[in-house]
Image 1 (cartoon, rainbow, N blue to C red):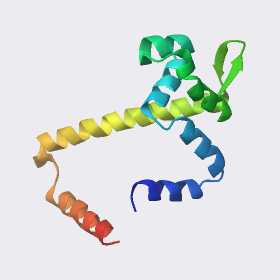
Image 2 (cartoon, rainbow, N blue to C red):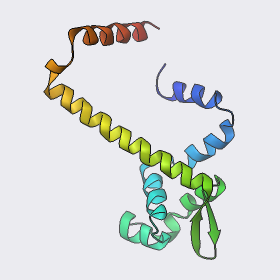
Image 3 (tube, rainbow, N blue to C red):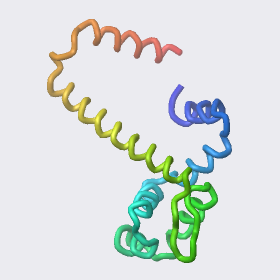
Amino acid sequence: MRGREYLCQLVMSIEHPDEVAKIMSALDSETRVRTFHLLHQGMSPKDIAEQELDYTRSGIQPYLNSFKEAGLVEVEGKKYRFTEKGEKVHELLTEFDKLHKDLNELQEFLVENPDVVPDEVLEEIERRRREQESE
């Protein structure tokens, strides 16, 4: 099971799939994730749009609306404040990004130093890969 099919099954096994889907929809592109992160760093929507993304302020308004609809931010006057849910989602995204970086570094290390992995481990990995392909 791969990609979208796996993601759909994962969402369906979650207690509140509608909430998870709203969050995933609000953060469904690199630009939306960057906007979310920069907003969390305290940048104004105008500065994010013009300085970081080369957009107009109105160009990122749909992103901001999605963040609000997903319960990630609240609007106070002209300022966006992260909700408890928004803070937790940002924390999880930051952790995910760190794990991704660590895995990439580990992969590079293993490619450059294949002798550090015992043959038994490589054989087990290959066995599991064949098993998954036959499913």
